Every structure is written in structure tokens, then in C-alpha cells.
Amino acid sequence: MATYWTCGHQGVICLSGLIIDACGWAALVGAYMVGPRLGKYAKGKVEAIPGHNKTLATLGVMALWFGWFGFNGGSQLAWGGDDTVAATTIVLFTNLSAAAGAVGALFTTWVWYGKPDIVQTLNGALAGLVSITAGAANMDPYGAFFAGLIGGVIVVGEGDVVVGVVVVILLLLVLHLLVLLLVE
Image (tube, rainbow, N blue to C red; front, side, top):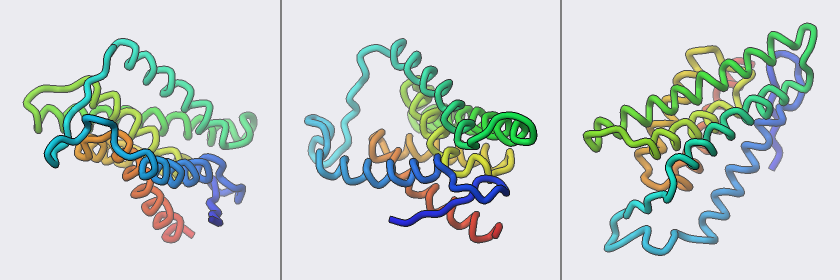
């Protein structure tokens, strides 16, 4: 698998893009090999498996959200001088996309199920983070917002977090490649 993405206008290999590419394919293969959890499907329908502690789940998502700033911002490979603006913009767009993913999932569950769901909202935030990672250096604020929003809606629509995240990663991989082809 040979992938070359550029971060910004510097022509360096985008580490986050390569990592997301590898993780997306590894997650797809792993999900296929492991198969669905016992009790996930009954009579051809998806059954929700509720989490045990929503407070700890929320804290976990907050920790991942905060850590993602270092991951995406650190992929700039420098933080000082002229690179300060680029790295700060990446962190800002990462936050914007995660928030948009959470809002997209929140309103999607509200419309579909008649009430907001905190677990799906947390999944939407994670989908927003995944959605922005490969293209954080190449997007404008609108692209970051809509990448997160679409990711948040898709993860709710899939009904299964693993499948939803894999779908988001692969769709945004294609979207990111199209953006790079159109920009360059």
C-alpha cells in the first residue's frame, strides 16, 4: 500500500494520513476476522448493546479528544516560528470537526429516536475526530465542519460503532484523495 499525502504546502509526508489509512484497513480486516459480538444481531436486526458506565465513557472520549490535538498538531512535525500558525490551525480544525461530529450525531439521534443519546453523541465526536485526521492540514473551516458533521451522522446511521468508524475512515480517505487531486 503506497500512499503519499502532503501536509499543507510543505511537501512532507502527512503522518496522520498514513496512520489513518493503515488503521482504517486494519480495522476493516480485524472487524471481518472477529465478526459481530454475540447478541449484536437477532433475527437479522441490529440489537443495541448498552454501555455500562456513561460517565466513564464521556471521560474517555474527552481524553481521546484532548490527545487528538497532540496527534494531529504533532503531525505538522514542527511547532514554532512559521509552523506555529499551521499547527495551531490544525488543532483548531480538529476541535471544530469533533464538535461538529458530536452535534451531527446528537441531532440525528434526536430526529430518528425522538430524544438525544449521549452514547451516540460521544460516538459522533469520535467520528468527527477520525474524519478530520487525514486532511487536517488541507482543509478550511467549512471542510473541517462538514467532515465532522457527516462523520457524526454516518456513525449513527450505521448502528455499529466499529462498522461506522470503518465506513467513515474509508469514505473520508476517498474524499481526502479527491481533494488532493483537485488541489494539486
